[in-house]
Image 1: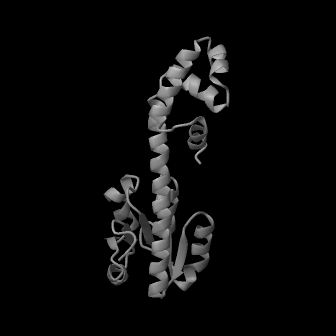
Image 2: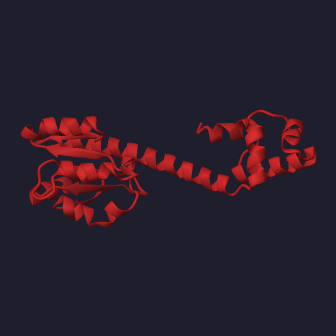
Image 3: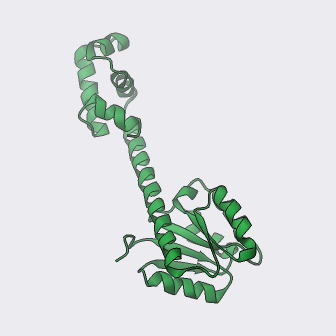
Length: 208
């Protein structure tokens, strides 16, 4: 059983035989794939238009008619969610230097044709693990931002001073409000942020 039952692998290669062989290989590990015969076809798909919500990666041929794999990779790098969609280049021997350069610029890896089946799928699963981690981190950040957005301006003021380590009395002095009002706002901040202490609050704001 694959550790990524909901994963999607995008196969971008102009060679139908390679696409079919890769799709079969991935099915042996219970991995689902979508195939595209060109970079342009992938860019026209829904997968291009949205941030991945499930672990995903791209198996990308370096050399294709029309837009090359490298040119597609350049477009991917411009996407704000690119880290959630790792790219593994498939390269012939002559394209290895190009693929190595792409790895230096952010591609996950490259596999030289003819590739070892097990080694390739192992790297795909490692790329999916990275994708899953990035997606989880983005969800945590979005959830944190939503909680912060739910705070009133006064609650934000109180939170900032509490996180800075000030006791309630000093917070009250700084904001020129009563200690009881600070306590009420502090309690609401803790509830909205889903924490039980100032230390826990400081930790999630630091991303720890």
